[in-house]
Image 1 (spheres, rainbow, N blue to C red):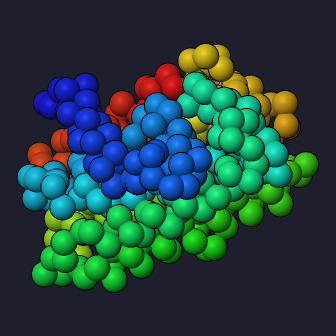
Image 2: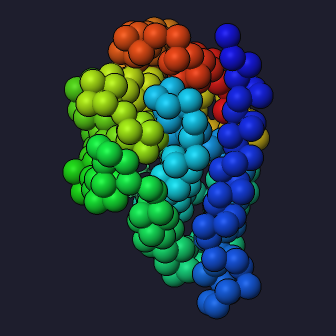
Image 3: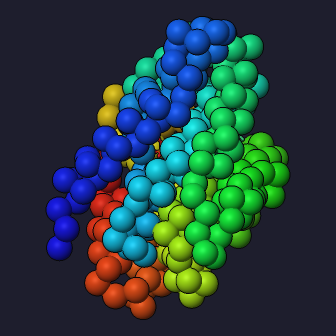
Length: 294
Ligand code: GRG
């Protein structure tokens, strides 16, 4: 078995270094913009999505250098979505990644623009991926654009806004989270695998893995919102209950939600069984995601 802590921290270091190299320095004009982008990007995220991208490449080819640009790009997209999600016109939150939210520090205007700039630079970074025999630069760009576009990440956010004040049923909730959370998680894995020249069959198995893992991640996120403190989470706990949001624990009860997270994790693991022992890093990450506390 791999030692996940060691595996994770080695890749996390590579991601931090990559992000630092790909982002303009905070001394580059306009300084406020680059400071603001870096403030949220280096505020202490877990780096789950980039590590999944690197792990998917490891699983396919035993190396991950060519996955680093996509790994950093998905973290830029994820961070932009958090910066925008925290704005007063969206979820209106003061606390993220253990720090005051971007707009609390830089103001709404700069926070909107920092989100826009993180979104834009993600494509510039993705374009640095070396083409493989199966995947072109356009394939990498299209992959990321679809996952973060109006039919996926943004669709999920629209669904979330439109479900406010209503009781969403299980299928509506799943529709939202397949888009808002699972699409980018699944795409991170796909991009990593594509950068390692995955075969169509390998890519299909990893896509199913990512979709189920992404949903399981959201179920656990809903559970942690109830069971953990703001300090532990680094973001405001108990928000869903206060906003009377439709969540997995609200629909299924806490125990039911825990069962659902286990069911989805088992489905994700089953999907990559055909990859054999090589899939170990992804299996270890899926297992850890289920028991995480923040
Ligand atoms: C396009 C404005 C806009 C929003 C997109 C993703 C999203 C919709 C909003 C973000 C808020 C949210 C609750 C998303 C669900 C996904 C999720 C649980 C994010 C938190 O991810 P972690 O725990 O965060 O990986 P860190 O900070 O560790 O990176």
